[in-house]
Length: 625
Image (cartoon, rainbow, N blue to C red):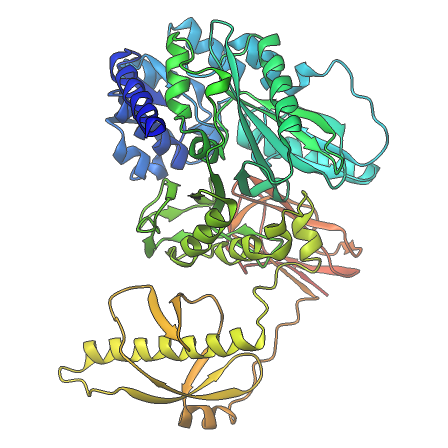
């Protein structure tokens, strides 16, 4: 009983501190999307007015609607809006904002932006400029680079989120990586400088959250396991890690705090490590900003990191001591992206969200998002839709809730990666904690092909598909017929792969929800469409055997865009002869550069696009003879 009373007393004290500690009257958020919405929520809780900045295409975005004021800072390209320091400084002057929260990405680690704010007497909600210079600008951290041979990692100096990052195994890949990484870095952060560091093959990526004030106090808030990655960008994170013991955790935490104190760091920051199989850990970098995956740390510690950043920026001391920081339960984060997971584990997808429903009806589920039904996912910005977070007393509980949450998440209008995320969190290797940064290519060496069905699950899928077909038919009857014929039994044929399976279906259906709860052989299921199945009436299935088969397109002599994006470079012209594997063009999609190459040696017949043009998925780019 006393422990409960103590917790309630601490909670009341924290609430009193929150409402009695004056910080800022108005904060401008120099970012967009889910992180802007996340910062606005905490500001509202603290009674702080907020200003949103936005590009012209983001004028109706959720973060703009949530803020008390909004200012357009330019056109869609990030260099003309969210990286446009002059326009953002003007917005600060016009609105009278006293402080700026940069979120992550964009200007969050830009020392020049922090200096300009300081010159205007505006508080930067982040570390002081000397700490950004020492830690955030990764080139300044390195007095020398000792190359021990390949592989090496080429990275953006001001980078994060996998942007401007390449692994090189030889000289040719180093030259190519330098070109693409510098272009991505300039597009994403307005800074094309790069660094090269030794790449440790097959490690775990584990990071320590730190929090420090301006009075020399610093804490480590435990670790986050971030090893599940594709193209060096995290997709599933958890806190704590299944791998660390308490001694290793403490050693990493204490070193992270020492590093923060050495550069007089203040605010929230993250020290990233690579950890080998023997629990040896190697410093990777420090990110002088809020991390994308910060919600899982908030779940297991009970701290609001945005609130702590605001308090520290105002000059308050930390409210907690190291012994006050718990590991309370387990949290998992899945990054929901608008992308096709069947293409390189996720190439971007664009479109309008025709239907969107977050699984917030489930217990201990948190969704950080910056979109809503009707929102557009465009080629200009990162393809993240949301961060789906589940929490439980144990890892097993958190994973079970994540599985339910993914099953109950409704996204229509864009291709998304929920099928891949669900496969990851239910895979035996992930459940056992046997993971590394090479998890995806090791588990899916030929790429992600979707869920592979065993016999029992295949029967469930066929029954589910039939039930969905019945639902669609009943909905149509409700609309088209004023007096629909009541029918409770159906004879159908379902095609999955080769051949048809006859089925008989009976029951009652809810026609209003995009989710269909079913009982299949006594097992409760929540149904959404994730497999391509075809359901026909018995007669239609018989007649279908007479239909001619569609001949697949010969793609050996054409190059189509695998994703929507902008043509950055065209490396060939009609009449050129290209070798197998030679670069033909470069497509930029959502701030990532993608090199498209020839699949055979051939002569270029025609070029159907030019640099600067926008192309859609499947558009013809080049014809070969």
